[in-house]
Amino acid sequence: MKNKKVLKNLAQLKIGESGVIDSFTDKDMALKLLEMGCTPGETVTLDRIAPMGDPIAIMVAGYLLSLRKEEASTVLVSMINPN
Image (tube, rainbow, N blue to C red; front, side, top):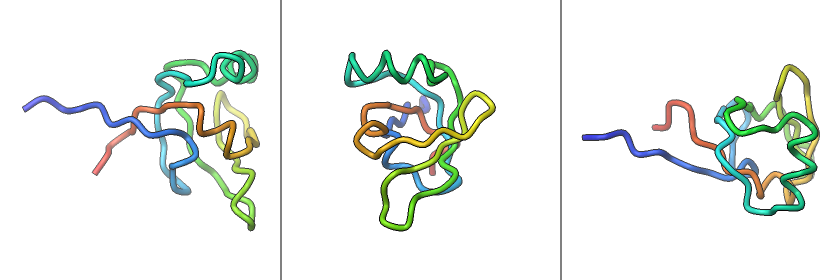
């Protein structure tokens, strides 16, 4: 049986979960995120979530990036070791 690719949007990750950027759902937001190092194939890890749930901080390209959940929801990631 083939492993099925499990995609989530970045805003759905739990703290400590990692994924590989697969694609974007918003063309305008994609350009902004690409400029900040969120490129397809790059591994991202959810590092922390603000007390009220927004924004979130992800590790990407060797640095910590803060994103609003609305922005993060436009990034589709392929899960690493999905259960």
